[in-house]
Structures are given as structure tokens and as C-alpha cells.
Length: 230
Ligand SMILES: N[C@@H](CCC(=O)N[C@@H](CS)C(=O)NCC(=O)O)C(=O)O
Image (cartoon, rainbow, N blue to C red; front, side, top):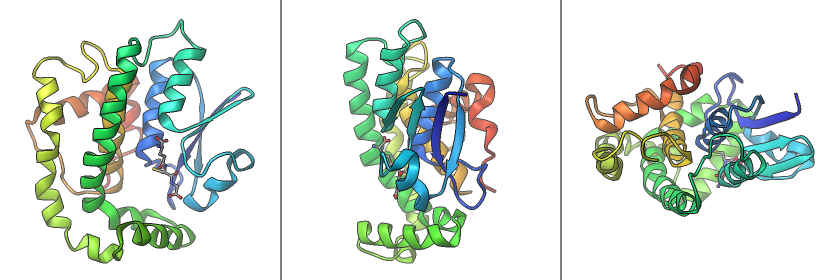
């Protein structure tokens, strides 16, 4: 196999959990391209392909190496134009940047507050040390201090879904009549929460929850290949 996607794992190497890697898994599936998914723990990320990136996902496609989930999606559309488009045109690319901004700045921030300690608990001891050091520096507080706000963060989460509900009141997918990369951006974030934490972030009967379930069903249930955290 010449196509390798490097993804993030904890102590269980089968449980890929990175939101950004899930965007690339779904992008490759959308394009109908085969690939091997290689699990990498946090502390091994800087060694991928001779140190090409500080973060995953990294895609090796023949002699091409691409990092960053958005750059990977752009690359795939350019390299495989005969396969279904991930953006549906230039406007779709521009719009996907907005969805990326909303996902990373609103959804990720809210999810992080709710599941930070759950992520830590999934990691092998060496990676736990890395995670604690880097995340405590980023948040300016201990993981336990962030986790103390867990209940409030879970209760506040559904409010962040308002823009998704709004969009879905007009169309079945964020991308319109079919899923596009913008769907996978938001799916990746919610899939990260589903795999890392048993916290119930998505309200039952919510259009955003129904859409997420439909995302999980895509491509023979690719998203369900990793079970939800119990
Ligand atoms: N903008 C990047 C973000 C990638 C990213 O932050 N990846 C995280 C995993 S979810 C990572 O590799 N972190 C390495 C670390 O924290 O040491 C993308 O979309 O690919």
C-alpha cells in the first residue's frame, strides 16, 4: 500500500481519536481511496516520516507527504479530480474555512473543557506526561482544575450547536444535499468526544445529533469502527 495516513492513538492503538485525523479518514473515504491507517502516540508524532510535522494527520501518498487536515483535503481534490469533490467548488473551499474556524474556536474549546481528563486517561504514561505538560501550559491551569468545570461544560455544550441546527433546518448535510469536507470538520470534533469520553454532549432528538448519527453511518459505518467510550 503506497498511501499511509498517520493518526493519533493512546494506550489502545486501535482507538484513533484525533478530531483532525478523523477529518482525513472521512476525506479519503469520500474520495474512495484506499489507505493504511498507522497509529502514532503523541510522543512519536515528531518522528513521523523523518520529522515532517509536529502534528497529525500526516498523509503519505506515494512520494508526496502532506500534513494538516485542510491541506490534505485540498491536496486530495487536486490530485484526484475525477473522484467526488470534497468542496464542491471555490466557494465551498472558502466556506469550509469558516466551518473550520467555528469548529476549532467554539466546538473544540467547549469539548476540551468537558473531556480533557478523559483524554489524559486514555494515554500511555509517557504520553500522559507530554499531554499534561503541554496542555497545562496552554490552559494556564492544571488538568484537574479544567476537569472541575466538567459538569458545567457538559450542560453548556448543546448551545454551541445552534449554527449546525440552523444549517440543518434547510438541508440534510452541512455541505448541502451531500456531505462535504465541512461535514467532516464538524464530525471530527464530535467523533473525538464520542471516542474519548462517556459524557453525553449531544441531546437526544436534536437535529445535530441525528446528523452526527448519519455521519457515523457513512462509508459502511467507518465512524463506528471505533466504539464510543463507555
Ligand atoms: N490544524 C491542524 C491541527 C492538527 C493538530 O493539532 N493535531 C494534534 C492532534 S489532534 C497533534 O498532532 N498534536 C500533537 C501534540 O499535541 O503534541 C490540522 O487540522 O491538521
